[in-house]
Length: 342
Image 1 (cartoon, rainbow, N blue to C red):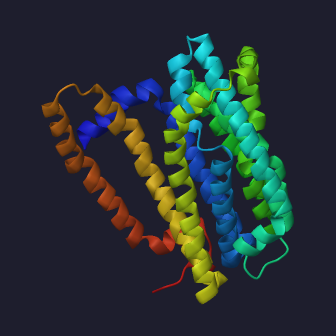
Image 2 (image 1 turned 120 degrees about the vertical axis):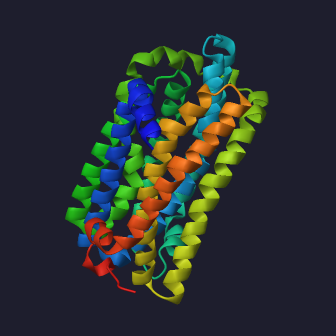
Image 3 (image 1 turned 90 degrees about the vertical axis):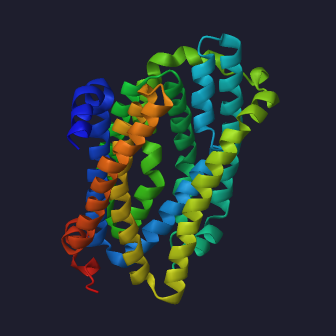
């Protein structure tokens, strides 16, 4: 364990991780604050509804942007010194994403009542939230497009700073909306939170206006669209299927047990997500950078054994502590309503 701590302190943190760590901490704090506000002002029933809305928003956003993010990053990084291919890349993903997003937005707006009936069983007064989401969806698409370009150009520092500021702005608006409008405010915050980050991103890309000249309709390439399609398929499968599965599970609990119990299930998955966020951060800060330095099979095997001896026991201990301290964790993150003793 000392080896792991020394490595993180002496190598990883020196490179990037002060900002990355801050970003993760801000994200966890934002999640805890939002969960606490929902528990206090909305309750378990509201948490179930918000979970359904969040899953719908997540799947729709990925479908609207065609899952292009990783593909854009790869090809912008590859062609950033090649003006012709860079123009084809930006033009193709921009126009394809623009058409897709507009179509999805129009569908959501005009089919809001049907979507409301599907994701909010027994609640028929939230169609206006779907319409709000449809209106702001293009701004989310622009934000994804901008993020992917900056990532492709290796602008990691500005990306992390935008993410931190965006998280602070998003949680501030969310808390205000929940306080003023309870469940309606919480649902609206889910619909708009990812889109309003574009206001921050716009500041970060304002000095890259020259890239706009690369986006031309005549440079749209069907060949490049086929080339980027594997990235799209992989992203669409995971980012659409998983939220839809969660939505289906929650809807099943609602129909067979009740909204309150579905809210408890949502609370459980949120606590799990916060803990796994810490684990994923550790992978980003230590494991992946360490693997990138390894040049031999023997050294790789040695590192794998080291990980099983250090990280895995720490991960298991963390899980045990979460279980033993579950009542206190639930009270801290949520409220007494969620602290059911079994």
